[in-house]
Every structure is written in C-alpha cells, then in structure tokens.
Amino acid sequence: MPGKLRIIGGIWRSRKIDVINVADLRPTPDRVRETLFNWLQPSISGARCLDLYAGTGILGFEALSRGAASAVMVEHNKSLARQLEHQALNLEAKNCQVFCTEVSGWLNICHDAFDIIFLDPPYKANLAGNNIKQLLNCGCMKQGTQIYFESDNELEEVDPCLQLIKSGKAGLVQYRLFSCV
Image (cartoon, helix red, strand yellow):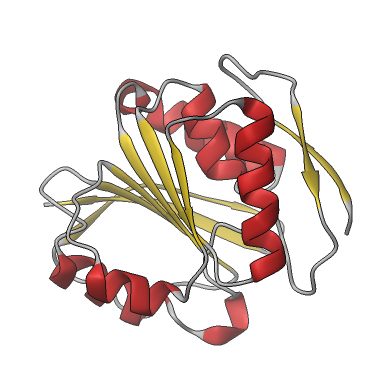
C-alpha cells in the first residue's frame, strides 16, 4: 500500500508523509486518528510519547505536530525504520528518535517514563497482553500515563492498573484509550 498519509493537525497540518509497501502495514485511519487526538488534546502539549510498532510513524508524527515534546518510535522492520528516520529529517523533527529493534527487547532495556504510549501491534501476533505487562514492569508507565491501544477484537482482560477512558470502533478497528492508575 505505497502512497502518502496526511498529518491532520498542528504545525505540520496537511503535510504528507510517504508510505512504503510493506506486508501487513495498516496505518491508523484518518477518522480514528482525529478522534484519538481529540481525546488527547488536553494532554498532548509537552508530552513524552512512545510509539511502539511505529510502522508509518503517523501517530508519533501527529503527536509531534500537535505539540508533544518528544516521540520515541520503535519499529523492527529495517525498511520502515529507515523510512521513519527519513520522514523525521524531512519534517525537521529533531525531537524524534527511531529504534530499529523488536519491541519486546527494547522494553526490556527501557527505563524512561512516558506520558502517552501508542500500542498498535500486528493483529495476528497476539502481543498486546505481554506488551502491557512489560510496559507496567519496565517503568515506561507512571500514574497518569495514557496508553492508546488498537486491535481487531476485544481485549480479553485488562490489567487492573489500567482504567478505560474512551473507546471506539471504525470498521474492523477497535481502539481504546487507557490511563495508568
């Protein structure tokens, strides 16, 4: 699905980022992103963001465009990681870091706390439960951290440390925003 994605709001509003053709890449649709960033509007300014399974990086770039202080993007696919670095250069996003590595391994060595975390793992891989446990154990989440989670089905069970704030559905995409309590 090569093409372009449009940044919806902020300083890079209407700028387009390139999307390369990679199997199973499914960028968050415009409508879902617009809803998500409406939910996050009160807390996005100055936020430290973590974009796991970054893919196109559209969530991290959208956050930066809207005033986030920084975005860390973790993507294991080398082609996508290179594309993320290229996009960051094109946008002159100096507050963007890209790590080309497996999410699980990166979480094992991360000890930084984030304000907002975007978690959008490959649907078929069933990684969400383990990723959430890792996030809670590694120190990436603190009280008040908001975590956006996207999937194609309902979550079986959510850790009691996470409180559901908002949720929605668009086609096959189910999306939720939690807060760490």
